[in-house]
Image (cartoon, rainbow, N blue to C red):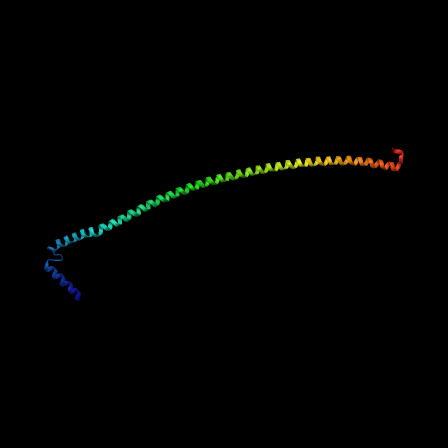
Length: 161
């Protein structure tokens, strides 16, 4: 209860001096002090702080804008490189097909030339064999004639001459 009684005494003493709020010369002095404090804090603390915050925001905004520009440029370069890569692949595929076609053509020509050469060699060899056969037959015919005459002469004696 002592706390309550102390509070009542404080309220009674404040009422005797003019109430809860005393409006004397201290109120305008306090108001002026608060305004001076606000101006001082504003000039010394808040303006540099807000300037630093604004500068930082501007820096972040410019970095974000530059990053977006770089990203767009990188994406456009990537698309351009993809298009060029596709064109290069197509041209290399076409070159490869052309090279294969040329190689097949050259191979076919070489095979045809080799076949023609082998056919001509076969024909020449057959002709040579036929020539040698006919020469051999002619030689054999003469030898057969000679041998058959010799056999006849030996068998028949001198009657066959």
